[in-house]
Length: 348
Length: 282
Image 1: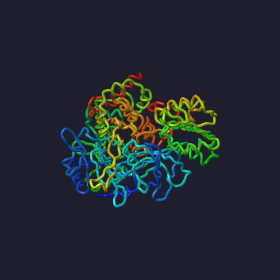
Image 2: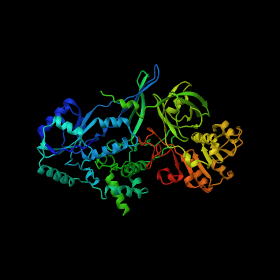
Image 3: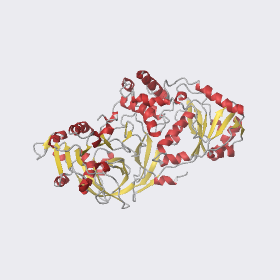
Image 4: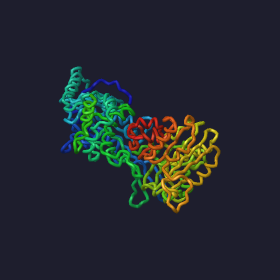
C-alpha cells in the first residue's frame, strides 16, 4: 500500500455522517452497529446505524476476509466433469475497526499473502478499504494496552479519533485519500487537536483493567520453559472443547474443507469453514489416531500458537489482547493474560 | 457481483487425473495408477504426497507410492479408512479424480547419494517408501547397499509381495520380512514377531547407513531405538509422519506439530529434528 503524505484533517460529526451516507450510496459498507446486548460488524444501509463509540464487537472484522463458509471451487459432474474457481469478491469498506483488530489483520496478511498466497484472501483483502477508529473506552476484558496493540499499525486507509464534536482524520493510503477527497468535507487539524489525540490515546491506556505482567516479546521465551507446567492439566480438565475462544479470535485462521452436492447430485461445491484446534477431532486422522487427544493438549497448543508459534513463523504475536476469548469461555479458562501471568509467576 | 479472475487459478483448484488401473493389494488396500489428463508429469520427488479429490465426497492427503523415475503415470496406495478412500476404492478405470500437489519435502535425495539405505516399513508405510525404493533401484549406481525391513500384522496383509521378490534378487539388496502373527493355516517363511526382531539379522555399517522409516506412530519409538542401537546417527534417521491435513500449504492448521507444519516442513523429518518437537513424543 503506497504511503500518502497528507496533513491530518478534521471533520465535524455531522459532516462525517454525510460522508458515511455518501459512501453507502456507492459502496458496500460494513460497520459497527449496536445489537443488543453488544456490538457487531454488519452491512450498513444508513449512517445512523453506525456506532463508533463501542468497546468490542462480538466477532472480529476478519470474518469479512475469511468468511465462513467460503467457496473454494465449484464443479459439475454431468454431462462431464467440470471444475472451476468459485469465490465471489465484492469491493467493500469496513468502517470502525479498532487498533487491536487491525494488528490481527496484519498477522492475517502475513499468513495468507506471504511466500504462499491464498488467492481468495488476497482478492478480498485488496478489495477492502479499512476505516478504523481509536478505542478510547476499552472493555473490561481487554488487555490490548499491555500487548502493545492499542495503537493502529500503518495498514489502514483512513483512521479516526473521536474528539467529541469532531473526528480527527488520518489518511493512510491512496485509496483512503480518494475516499476522503471524494466524499468528505474536511479541513486541516490544528496543532492543538493533534496534541489532543495524543492525550486521548495516552489516557485510554490507563483504562485497561487487565494487563500482562511481562512484556509481550517475553511470552515466547516463557513458553519455552513451560511445556510441562501443571497449569495445562489444571485448566485443560475443565475445557469443554467447545471452540468458543477460537471462534471469536481475530487471529484464528484454521479451517476445514468440505464438499457438498446439490439435491440433483449433478453440481457441487467445495468450501471451507472455520475449524478450531480446540475441537476434539482437529488433529485426528482417519485411522483413528488423535495427535492431540486431551483438552489439556489442545489448550496448550492454542496458547503456544498465540504466544510463540505464530510469532516465529509470521513475525507477529497471535494474541492482540482483545479479550474476546476471556469473555467467550464458558468455564473461564481461556484467558491468555491469565495463563501467561501464571506462567511468569511459575518461572520466577 | 464481481468474480475475481485470479480465483480461476486458485491454489485449491485441482488438476484432473484419470484412473488407468486399480489393483487390489490386500483386503484393505488398492493401488491406483493415475495419469494427469493434460498429459503432464506430476514432477514429484520420492516421499512427497498429493491431495486427492473425489468431487462431491472430499479431499484426502495420500503419499505417492511410485518413483518419478518410472513413466508418466503415478501410483497411490490407498487403504479404506474414511469417505474419500472408500470412494477411491470404488473408482473404475477411466474415472476422473482431482490432484493437487505434489506437496511436502520428500526424502532428502542429496543427503542419500552414495549412502547405504535401510528402509523400515510398517504396514501401509511401505507405500511412501516404495517411491524411494523404486528410485534407488532405478538409479542403483547412485546408492550403496539397500536393506528393507518390512513388517505387517499378518501374511495376508503383506503388500507388493511380487516386488519384494524382485528387489530381493537385485545385487546388494537384502529384504527381511516379519509378521506380528501368523494363523496356522497360512504359509509363511519369514519371521513371526514385531519388526524390531529383524534388527539382529542386520549387518550394516552405521557410518554409511541412512535409515528411512515409515509406519504407524506406535512403531517409531521402537524402531528409532533399534537404529540408534545399531549406531546410526540421529541425523541419518528419517521418518515420514501422517497428520490430518486439509490445504497442504500451511494455512489450515491441522498438521501442525509444535511449530512445524507437516505439509510444508515434512512429511519427512530427521529424528534429530523430531526429538526437538515435544508433541511428537518420539
